[in-house]
Structure formats: C-alpha cells, structure tokens
Image: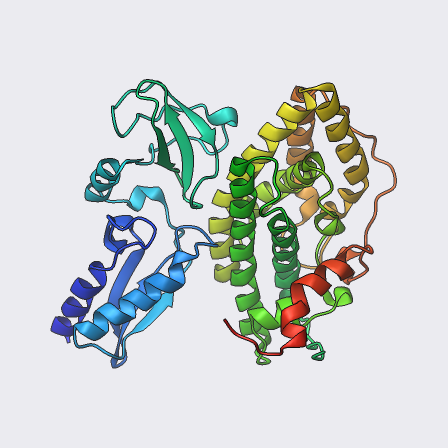
Length: 160
Length: 248
C-alpha cells in the first residue's frame, strides 16, 4: 500500500501549473497530500485563489499522470483549509520563478498598504528601482511591474 | 423556459446563500466590464476581481447544496432562481454606471467585506471559516485597489472628482443594508466602526464629501430587489433557461 502511495505521489509531483509551466504543483504548494481513502488513492489539492481557473485542469492532469503510473482510479479532491499561502512556495520554486522572469513573492509584504509601498527586485537585472504598473495582471496571482533600470516589464507573484 | 428551483432555506442555507449571492452578483457586474474598461490594466483588474468573487460564490453555493441535500448544485442556485429568490445586498446589483460608479460600489462593499471575512475566519463552522480564510486574502486586494482609485478619482481632475462624488452620493443610501441584523453568524453591526473608519479615511484622502446618513434602502436580504437585478439575471441565465442542462 505504501508503495502505491509513493508511486502516486511521485506521479502527482510531476504535474505542472498550466499558467507557469516551470513550476510543479509540489513547488507551488498546491499539492497537499496523497493518501489512501479506503481502497482508493486520494490526492488533495488546494487552490491558490478562489477563482483560479487552472484548478480543473490541474485535477485533470493529476488523473492523467496517475493513470500513466498505473493507478487509473485515483480520486482528486479540492480542499480550502488551511488557505494556501505564498509561504508554501518552495525555495526551488522561488528560484525557478526568478529564472523564468517572474519575481517571487516578498514574504511579509502588506496586502493593505496603499499604492504598492514595497520593494520588488527586477528578476532580470536585480535592480530595486522598480515600480508597479498594475495591481492585477495576466493571472489572479500576479501583478505587473516594470524595472526602471533595464526598462523591462515583469510579472510579480503577489504575496498571499 | 425551465422552471426555477425551490430552495428549502434553513437558517444556515439562507446565511450561506446571502454571502454567495453577494459574491455572484457583484462578480457578474464586474464581468460586464470585460473588454470595455478604460484601460487594459483595469480591464484585467476588474476581470480578476470578478473571478475571485465567482470563486467565492462557487465554494459557498457548493456548501449550500451540501447543506440542503436536495439535489441542487452551484449552477442550479445561480441559473435557476428568480430575482425574488436572490438574497444579495441591493448595493451590489446596482448597474456599473461609469468607472467612478463601479469603483465607489466596489470600495463601499470591500470596506465591509474585508473585515467581514476576517471575522468569519473565527467562525465555528469549518467550511465557512475555510471560505473566509481564502476570501479575506482576496478582499484585502479588492479594498486596496478600489481605495487607490477613490483617491485618484476624487483628488484628480474636476471631471473625475465630480463623477466620484456623484457615485458616492448615489450609492450611499444602499450602504445601510450591510449592517442589518441577521439571525445567525456575525452581527454586521459590530463591523460598522471599522467600516466607517476606512470610509472616512479614504474619502477624506480623496477630498470627497461623505454623505449624511439619511434614509436607507433595504430588502435585498429577503428578495425585494431594485429593478436592476431582473435584467441582469435575464442575461446571466439566458443560456441555461433556453437550453436546459447545456454544457460546454
């Protein structure tokens, strides 16, 4: 049984976020648990944002990955509690994000400070002379920023 | 036309539907801006906020379905109830108007929703507490975004200031309903001081005049809506009512 769970976990860990394909759902902290529920393998995932449209696709991808690993009848369950936080993003995940051109979330930055009073280093040239262009960007989890030094716009993964 | 569902509104089902309807109705209003917002950034912002609200509504409708155990699902609550069965605040069904109007509606509600969800994270019901814990993170961004716009518009040009003041004046009589007592859950009156502090602070930074508390509209929580909800639902429900059970 433990072998089955281990095999299932390895398979689930290979699934990537459809919006940020360099990150696996394990890097993101979206994958919460893989365990036996009776005779069935159950994978629990949690959404980053309530309305995250990637969740359906992620659930589908997990089913396919487990099917390929010889576990055809696994169940994927979405849980809301505890609420996902950017603190669950692994160090590997943060490094991969930066390399991909997305600034990782700054821990402890306030969601309540007006007019984006925070410092986000540019993922390309590391300058801290950056400014926010839009609070909401290409996906719910990102804001749009621009580097004043290298002039490149970049996505910032919002603290959550 | 498909007939509407009849909901057995136990106190907890009703309480859950009120929160869900608030999120769905405001989320749908925001989706009406898609492709029409004054700038691309705001188009995406409004769509993103609408998506957050839709996600909150879905989680709450699913919970209502589980509680009611009558075979209804999230789509049934959204698409197969008529206006008098909707339990949302009247403020949230008000039409988008101009951008200032949409921002004022968002601000007046977010200043309430943010402390509301925060209070609900301590709720004894684990599902509601879980929805609240997610929603609270999102409402903090919604409040920040709409607060910044209130300040920019109010303290902006002569025209933006005039439009922002008109919006606040028009929507103000719909704010009292947020604090009406309910049979269970959080007593919204306890959140009024924090709401008032936020509103006074932002309106003053925006150099806008806070309207006096006069007569307030009410009735949304018991299904007595303004004339605006019906047409909105007619558009939103058209597909499911005309082609029952249609799927993508």
